[in-house]
Image (cartoon, rainbow, N blue to C red; front, side, top):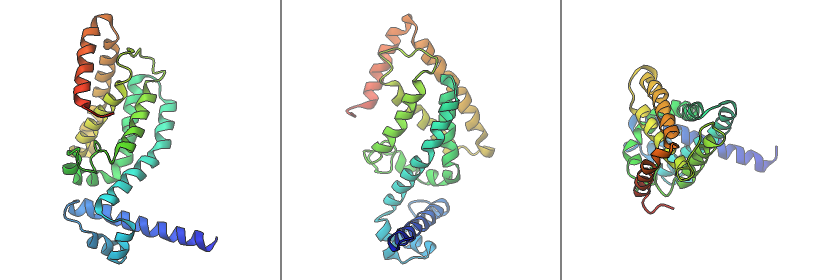
Length: 227
């Protein structure tokens, strides 16, 4: 291994030590209480070194988001490849997300206050997380391809985003679910995916056209000026 490669490997290891130390402190103390000095101490590095790798706690969380997003991509692809039918594909896609975030559920809980504010950079609704959000929504687009359910043409462009919002509701419930092994979330996911799939099927009926029009108007209001 070249010197440059060894340096890169050591740098990556140090970055991961800081990231993992931060996540552990976020679980134990909460995001607001943990400081960069605390994180550096737990990671066994100088405070200045921690700031070199991550200029702020927000930067640490953004790296956590990006790494988690990248890590789950192959798992989502494999899951959708072997899943058939809209209900199954929707349910299994969200289940992969919950399994991926499982070890860091307490971290997501610590971030709830920031996540609820779309103006906060760590919110899943913020401009800063737009790239990750787009990757997520693209998977919901794939869920709808050859899913065996007819999707009305007027609803098709908006439906992936709507399903993404639905997913976020399930994840929020999962984060605050205190039942053993989040059993309530499992039941909620099964039943809600069944209900959503049924509504999508019903939306394709001719008599549902006025309802779809109203639903699309509501979607536009929720989206606001987002492009």
